[in-house]
Image 1 (cartoon, one colour):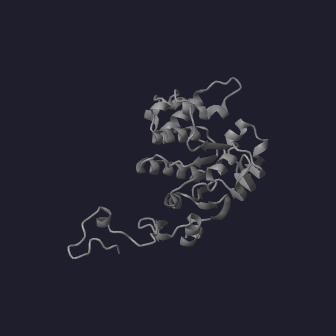
Image 2 (cartoon, rainbow, N blue to C red):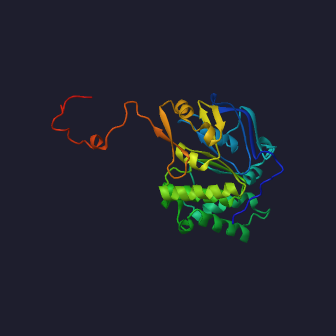
Image 3 (cartoon, rainbow, N blue to C red):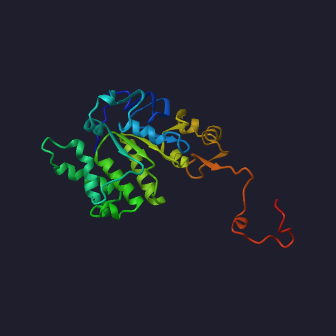
Length: 292
């Protein structure tokens, strides 16, 4: 099994203190603070433009903080060299440009860069980690194909395999479910659940709050760059908090199989029949031109 080294002596694998950052003078995140430990899966929820991607870019060191501090296993992010950061945190970004002539296997092998010796050569352990990561993500058959030939969902699986091959204890994932069909999505999130249970820390930005309720142990709500809630699924996955987060009426019901809360969009004018939605003809006794 792909391994990683989590430092149990540190109380937090990730700590964020009063983080403020943005782009070219435009503030995005304002005074964001939270901490995460190994064995947790945190889901970032929030509307478009709320700062989820910006937060992940800051945590990975791509975007420099204007104010505040970020610590990985007790070490200041700003004091870590890129290879040191990569040993502690692996990232699956949203979108991005990649060398399209690379094969999927070559892309996953890049995840072993933090572990290269001073000679800069990949060894048997590196290739074994790549094989395990590709298999875990159901991407072994993609290994010889060029990135230019992959669909969006296939590329997502390859990028996650690269992060797993990196063997870092912290996973930062930005919209991993994008482009995945239901079967692949369930398989990859089950894989993340096994990683979490083994002691890893997972922080993922997701648009599907129902998916977050199933797999996350904590939910963080971002709105207009501020953290508006942070708590367990049972504590914060409520109609009141979700409706306020997204500025729309949201109902919450229990999943019929697992007993977990699930969100439903509450239409302002009530439900619409499938027949009406398919353009069915009105009843013979009704006034066809009357709008109820």
